[in-house]
Length: 115
Length: 112
Image (cartoon, rainbow over all chains, first blue to last red; front, side, top):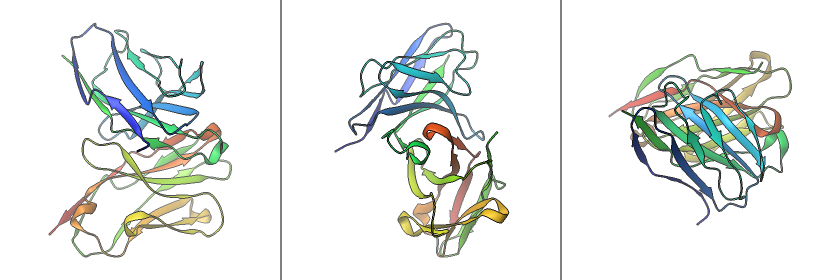
């Protein structure tokens, strides 16, 4: 079955530690995205990548970093510079072929709690 | 800059009743509009999308949405709600390079 996987589902870290969230897709999509979700705020774009080895900052990139070494994955690192990292993180992908009408498909999410 | 407003944070309906979730957008160009649904602790599932053509769009699970350019709206409707429809619903507008701007979401509670 084609889809997007995120791991782990739950992640606990101590304050000041960096942590990396995994996202992989087998949909053969070129574009991948990371969002942060907080209650009552919808989804906010952290980073996006339209092609391997290229990525752009979204609306709330401070304190986060990504890499895109393979088409299938886009790991997200939450650094100690992120002031309030506790949130639900969602990864998405799209074909990257339809321009403005590209449709994004989402993974199941990772809930990060910083203690 | 683009924006999406979902005026209702929380809506409660009885099972079998009709449903309308409101969505208003602000975007200077032709809007590409989406509705997603999210069950607690899960990812988002695409319900339907509007790109062009017929302004009444049919989606999965019996949902439909109507695009009204004059009102900058894209409201989601269902004629008869089922208990399994209880979830959070997000409206989004697609902008350049396939990026999405989301509304704050509407939580739907269904009473038996």
